[in-house]
Image (tube, rainbow, N blue to C red):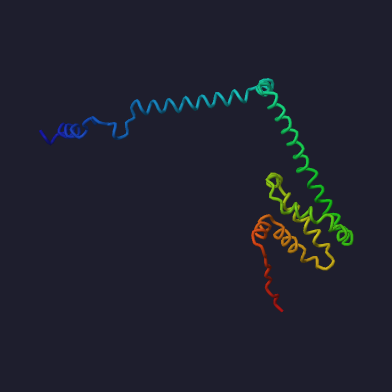
Length: 197
């Protein structure tokens, strides 16, 4: 009778003894439930806050601004005005000035050459600027380099095909990193390798 179907059931029952100390291996008891409840509550609170912020009317937002002190309101107004002024310059005036200089330089070589002394320093400063605003306005850095290249093509003594190289060389020479390294050494020497004949 030990070979019958009941023998198989009793041997399987012996193998399936209840585990008494389950905390060591994957206790999914009250600790897990508490953590899960806490996560759900955080999610619900975050969702409720997000909905409240989205549903806030302009008057409620103004009420939040109204709770600022007079000094804070003045500072906020000053910052808003300055932000608006800089946006107008960077998005409109600055690119227009660069395009006007570039058009002037490329319109006639004599006009461009005569304007070099008055415009070159400003255009070089624009091209080497490390201002964070350049990263915010796409194409501003490249427009500065194109304008500098246009001015470099107006130099009588240099062929126009070398203008991009001259523009790059000027940006390297006037870059803040180069100026720092030059000021740290009392005597700076420039070494130029001989050109191939």
